[in-house]
Image: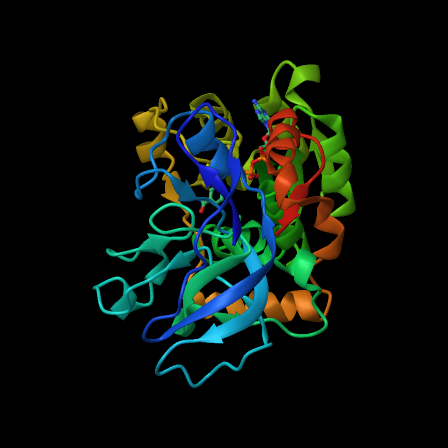
Length: 340
Ligand code: NAD
């Protein structure tokens, strides 16, 4: 089969012929219809964040496809069914899985990190973790549900605990941040979107942002947010992965507010502990999404409460994957998918 192979940082992926995977016990082989192009891959390619599986390997963790082969013991799927693969697989037996927190599973396995992912014609997946994709959701665009939409759902609903009427500020309106804006706005929050690119802010408005702010045009974003929210946001989301914007997002909060860290950085942020203690500030991380929430997100997409089709702004053949990464580096469009 054809696959885009990652050989290590600071080099483009290479399209090569590799053996097609075969399904073992409890596994299925999925013919990949589409795989979303996420900034997490750029951390491996550009910033040298190591993958758990040593390269050469196949990246890609946002995939939809058609069941192609069924392994022994799989009874819940038939060949030809449309499916969505979660970005992360959980073991089902560690203390986190047993208490409903599978997204922080002790033995977590991520496609395109611990195991081969979906920038390829076929991918192997455990049947127990795979979801059926209803016919109302197109396969090509539906791929991005598995991270770009489920991750924001978990962050907004479970970690931010956003309620209707809350005032929310979202730093970073890329593929993930725009869906924080979309989901928070859909459930009735007043949402301020922040990005350095005006095009991203235009997208944010179409997805429900009440206000948009560009830090390159304002001296003090935190002051502006305080003014707009009459004292500070209830919940701030950082969806960039930059300690500076994490500090800025924290500075936008009211007393008793909460920062939800979604962006990835290996650097430290500065935090005023006095303010954190005296004003009962909260800081939480948010990683991926629990399997139990996937059917909810799929249903929201099926009935059109969450926009999906509109979020895929470019489609590339597998051979165009490095161009898709270039667009992501430049911040163009919302989400690209490759169609292996
Ligand atoms: P992206 O590149 O599509 O979006 C990043 C956005 O941030 C861009 O729109 C960019 O213009 C904006 N930005 C950059 N610097 C800024 C600044 N100083 N101020 C304001 N805006 C700025 O990336 P993405 O795919 O949306 O991913 C965003 C982050 O989330 C990455 O760090 C990624 O690794 C992380 N991520 C986390 C999870 C999770 O489970 N927590 C899942 C997926 C991705």
